[in-house]
Length: 430
Image (tube, rainbow, N blue to C red; front, side, top):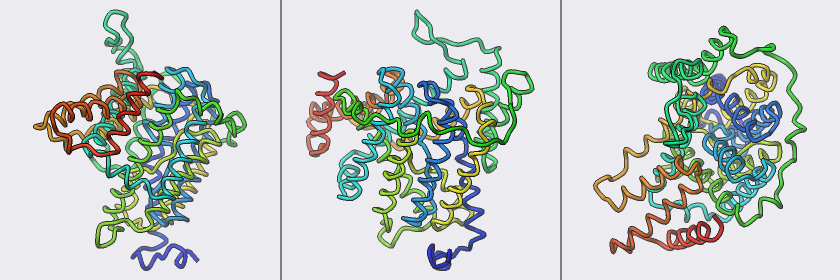
């Protein structure tokens, strides 16, 4: 049955290989099980319920991707967007987490419609590649700032806004150790390096009595505190338009980039370099986002860590289905997730930040009309503590600089329209 459904022989793979690939992929992305509950709990959401929602969102998304699109690509609540959900939408803008989930649902619904009507290609192709790289790098810098504050390395300062924390405390010392460990293990190509780093810091924290572990395995916590609590009507507030757009935009780029990147490495593209069943993959991603928002998870997206599974031979949706099973089994490890302190996840956040900022290496720094808006977009995200603001400033500065430089031909209809909308949003609905 598995052979017929996933076409294993046609993809030159076996059930054993697909299982190994699925477990490998899961181990490389399992850190989200520890980071997401800690982060979303700061909004007032029940930590246990968020842990369950994270497991279920990963299971649902990966299963849909495997069964519908037959690709070895795993999904789970995305890094960056969960930070935007927590620190910008709820803690900075003051919306409730229920309204935030409503905005996530609406972004998934729009993504779903765009996938059906094939609008995605027009938008992706209309946005300059350097600006896309700037958005990714900006999210990385945003995560880096969050990581440094969680590790208490960067603290608030009334005179200079931010300052250096007391580095002789437990949090900064263990966070620094955890980051170095993750980087070293990654360099040595150790599977699950990020998760190992988080667990290593937690073990030391337990030994120091800085956290408590009440068992390892238990029945899953109740999902009731977050299940179907999203407020879609509240998310229709005009002030949340840019928020919905930011959720949509980042998910769109993340998903497209991940799908193409993983497929190319796994040699799943056709002779023209196109991705067969792309529409199904996008539908899987958008459907998972809507389902995740209903149970209490931030935007669900495709994970680039899926390349770890394809590296050991994963070629079909069976790999993604194995990841889904692993997420379901993780439901019974909630006590372990509850014992992980915030500073134990900080090294993982900073490591992801390093990976995301690497895209700046491909920017043409010799062209000042490109370099300037890229820097504006990337720095605006951490400094305004908002991904949406960074995207807006990036689009506006790109268009304004190109116009004033006389390079009108570098602009297309989408850039004119989107930049104008961002000006209206910032001017009248800040």
